[in-house]
Image (tube, rainbow, N blue to C red):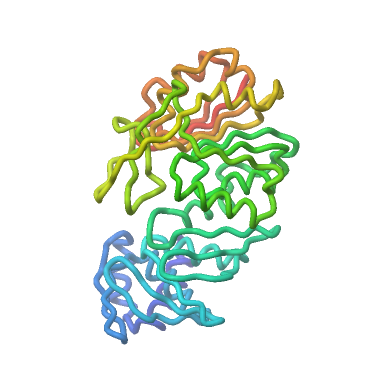
Length: 331
C-alpha cells in the first residue's frame, strides 16, 4: 500500500471500528502483517491484519453488515439481504472483485456465486482454499495475459474452471482443462456451463502424470487448491488430508487431442506435478507448445535447464523461493 492508500485505509478503519489514528499508525500501518485481536460491537472476536480490516471496512462502507465472526471466519449480510460466510484470508479478494464490477448473485455458508464481465458466472468456495484470490489473479491482475484469440490452450490445474473460462472468454479456440479433484471438477463443469463456454471448453476429471496410470491424489480438507499427486514436491500445509485414487493422463496424449494443431499456451498449476511431467515430456511434444506459463511449488530444481534445452526463453519470478512462476516462450 502506498501512502495515500494507507491514509484512506486509516480513515475507513477509524470510521467503522472506532480505532484512533495513533493506534492504527502504531499497531497496523507500521506492522502491516501483524495479526491483531479485535472485538466488534456485536462481540464478535476477530483476528485480523491491516489488509483484511481495510477490506472489511470497505464492505461496511458499501452497505454490508457483520452478523458474526471468530478468529477464522466472518458472516456478513450484504445489500439485497445476501448472507455469506467467508474466511478472513479471502476477504481482501472479495472486496477487490466487488470494486472491479463483479456482483454477488447468491451465497451461503460455503459457497458464493459471482457474476463478472462478459456474462462470467462462477461459484467459489468461501470458507476453504483460495478461490477468490485466484479470481483476482486471473481476471483482474491477468497473470496469464489476456489475448488468446484463435489459440488452443491446455489448462492443467483447472480448479473450479476459473482459468478455463478466462481463456475461452478471451478468444481461445479450444480449451482442455484438467482437474483431478472431484469436488473442484464438478464446480468447474457447472461454472463452465453457467458462463456459456461449454462449447469451447472440455473438462477432464484426471491428473496430469508422467505415466498413463492411476495415482494417489492427496486432498487437503481445508485447502483444496493445494491438492497434489506429488507428496515430495507439494506445498506442505497443516490440517487434515486424505488420499483417493484418480486416473492419470500424459501431456502428450492431451496435446494429441488437438489433432496436430499447435498449442498456444500450456498453463500449469498442478501443485508439484510439473517436475515429473516436464522431465518426462518428449521433444516432439515440446515443439507443439508455443508458451508454458506455470507455477512451481518446491523450488526451480532443473526446470530452467529442461525448458531451455527444449527451445524456450524464460522469465522467472522469485527464482530463489520455493514457490514462484515461470513464463516460457519458444525462441
